[in-house]
Length: 142
Image 1 (cartoon, helix red, strand yellow):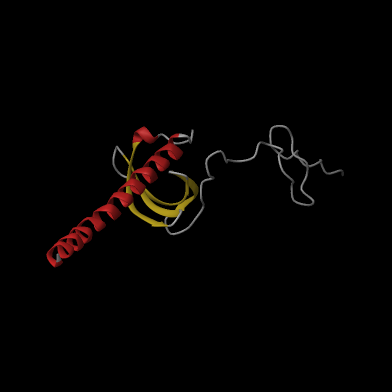
Image 2 (image 1 turned 30 degrees about the horizontal axis):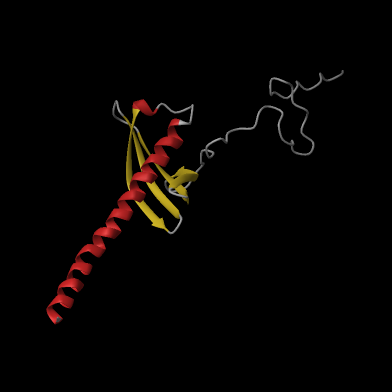
């Protein structure tokens, strides 16, 4: 009887880490899918010209951070980005991105610059034209 308990305990200890790896692998795959989906939705990126390498993924509950490196396929330039993700059901969604080490971030999916004329201008700012430019200042009178 004692040998059976030892054998069962050993089997549990053997298979328990494998179950954890499976969950981590599922998260890694789902995070990669979320990143690919996010990047292909951006009209200003040509992902066919770049290689994406996920360097590190850190999952804490329903939040994750991914360090991603992009390299131009023709060689040369590379860039590293840090993505913040949130789990929604079984899928992951990008909540933010910025160059690794700080800097400006690109807006989340569906974001972008507001259309010309949208939003409030700072106090004292001249009105904008339909082309999105401030009108020329009036000519000085002699």
